[in-house]
Image (cartoon, rainbow, N blue to C red):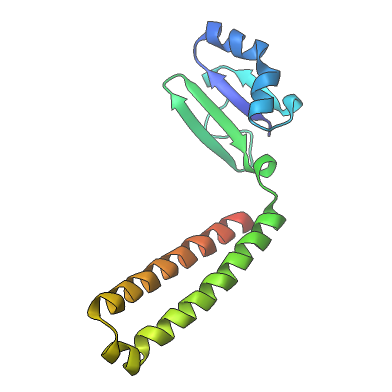
Length: 137
């Protein structure tokens, strides 16, 4: 699936077609894989494959195939490193908030901020794991 810019206005579409190579350069995609067409040409990703649909404004949409945007293997490796780092941070924070010495000696504000940091790290981990699942599909 090529990247596609869809424009309802035929005059604007013609102007974009003239500047297709510049748009491809700015979008960091192969100019041969970028097409400019009408809104009616692709409905709901009928061309198959996963794509990001960007609605810039009424009458101007872009379809960007994920396969051309992300190297799934490299992204999984990068996310895997983030998961390992977050898991280590979560373990450290969990030990801290479960330790009786910390809870009895630390100011209540510090205990609360540590618990909040733990919750944020867990949410980040859930988000990254969800992203990794999305790359597998």
